[in-house]
Image (spheres, helix red, strand yellow):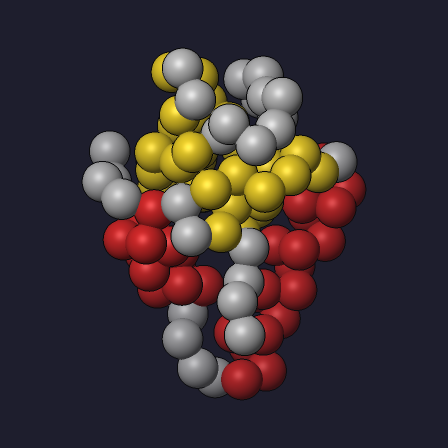
Amino acid sequence: MCVALPGIVEKIEDNNVIVDFSGNKVRAFGGFCKLAPGDRVLVHAGCVLQVVSQSEAEELESILKDIDVIGGGTPVRDVRSFADEAAGAVL
């Protein structure tokens, strides 16, 4: 299963964007969507897939946290670290 993680666009550089995942800043390809700084987005495999509302992003973050508590598996911070590696250079 693939997971797209919610983040916040911080900066736009041509077709690339800097996305903040709870303090982890990652460069991602943003050329598939019209983006602006402050947009809440879903990122998968180093690409911004879509812009989401604040409430959708919060709901997804809550689900990810619930999975961590229920599953007792990989903490959310480790999932985000994996996303950083998949997206390219961590800033």
